[in-house]
Amino acid sequence: MALRTADQYLAGLRDGRFVTFKGERVKDVTTHEHLGIGARHTALDFELAEMAEHRQLFTWTDDDGQTHSRYYKRPENSQDLLNRREMIETSTRIGDSVVLLVKEIGTDALFALDLVSRVVDAKAGTQYNKRVAAFHQHCRDNDLTLAVAQTDVKGDRSLLPSEQEHPDYFVHIVEEREDGIIVRGAKAHTTGTPFVDEIIVLPTRAIAEADAAYAVAFAIPVNTPGVKLLASPFGGGHSLGAFHSPVSSRHRLVDTLTVFDDVFVPKERVFLQKEWQAAGFLANTFVEFHRFTAISYKPPLCDLFIGAAALLAQYNGIHKVSHVRDKLTKLITWTETVRALSRAAAFDCRVTDFGLAVPNIIQTNLAKYHFAAHYHEAICWVQDIAGGLVVTGPDEADMASAVTRPFIDRFLGGAGVNAEDRLKALNLVHDLTASDFGGYNQLLSIHAEGSLEAQKITIYRDYDLDRCKDLAAGIIDVEWK
Ligand SMILES: Cc1cc2nc3c(=O)[nH]c(=O)nc-3n(C[C@H](O)[C@H](O)[C@H](O)COP(=O)(O)OP(=O)(O)OC[C@H]3O[C@@H](n4cnc5c(N)ncnc54)[C@H](O)[C@@H]3O)c2cc1C
Image 1 (cartoon, protein in one colour):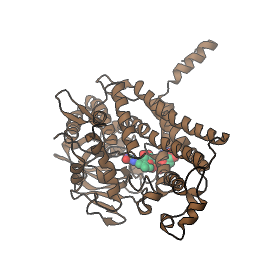
Image 2 (tube, protein in one colour; image 1 turned 135 degrees about the vertical axis):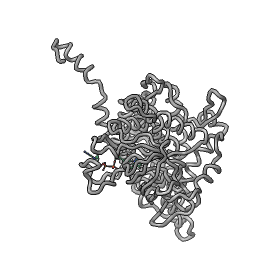
Image 3 (cartoon, helix red, strand yellow; image 1 turned 60 degrees about the vertical axis):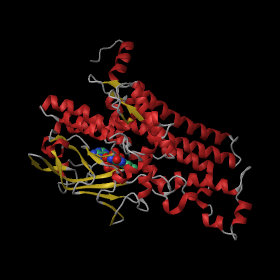
Image 4 (cartoon, protein in one colour; image 1 turned 45 degrees about the vertical axis):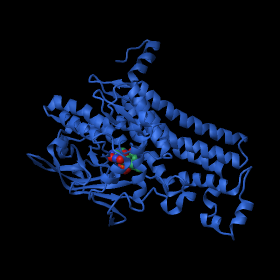
């Protein structure tokens, strides 16, 4: 099969999968009142690949003349990584700042599995790399979508998997058979699971030998018996409509508590089975690729912050005021630092001896940290410029009422702008910063792709301190090694 259409993709999601929303089983995720918004959002991925103006960026033709989704192109050099970041930034911009994430995160995991399985095979004599390559080809040739369930529910954060109150807080192997394994446990906040064909499961952290059963990686179709997806209601603006929620009424991510209730995984889909020494290596390698995806999809939301703030500065008649210019400049600086670092991470990539380009770790983590560390501050700048009407403005019904509309038109206009357009701009800021969706984005900025501390740990761990120590020691003429 070549590329799928959006309709073919959506039809594939009607496969009997077990998804719940607010305690009730969902019959069809594509037509569900809330989840359907997420499904139509992710279908954009397939629509873009069909559009003449985007086809070249979103597809790639291999040496045999077969055309595939570009997400499945294994990065071999800086240009491949630049193309990938451009594709992710473009699709997110067209998604009005909401990333699609039905191929991005899964291919991040495929690249990490390719790298790690080679090392494990060489040390343990396993055959995982062939299985990873076969799975990659299967996804590419069938134009499939993928979620990645890495973050375990974890219980007590200070304890190892086997030290927890019960053994199932982390996903683990409960039975090994000739033809595969049985797994049990749950993963938290898995994004996009109701809207993908396959779930890739990876370990969260490094573990000790006593916890070898928790060193497990695999991929299975979402409708596999025993897989249960409890969809979160947060992050949508459907009920308020397009006037109040211009972005979130049309675009949303859906995350699930992903339960593995004694799930059978056939052995050709198992990519790590108790090789406990590799659990942390796999977890970190995935993150190296996934944080690059993160910093590729962040800029469109930052751009929207700048645009909405600049528009409202004009509508409020304060665009020439120095503190407003200062805040807009800070927003621009924040945005362009993230964008520039994401490009730098592609330029300064590391190419492995088997030809896989890995984005620069320091620059990737700096970009993610810089974005997250200043996100709430950026909201403060935007809200400051916008003013209190962001949360005190009238309802859409007031706009439609002959009783109230004349007052709105008379009293809520701005500098050279009518009341309706000004309220639309204010509602955009409400949606992005003061709504359920805005709050969701705040948590996403901090925690998705790893918390702030995770980036700091990585920057410290990977930075070449010795190079700087050499420099200092050389100037004062001392030996330190
Ligand atoms: C919107 C969103 C989407 C996401 N999508 C996905 C996804 O698709 N797939 C996926 O696998 N994950 C996903 N995540 C999970 C994300 O990677 C985690 O939220 C993140 O790694 C933090 O883990 P946590 O939520 O369990 O928080 P916690 O681990 O509870 O972190 C809370 C605080 O505790 C600290 N902490 C935790 N453990 C320790 C410790 N041992 N020692 C010291 N400090 C500690 C952290 O640094 C942080 O400050 C998503 C998260 C969000 C918010």
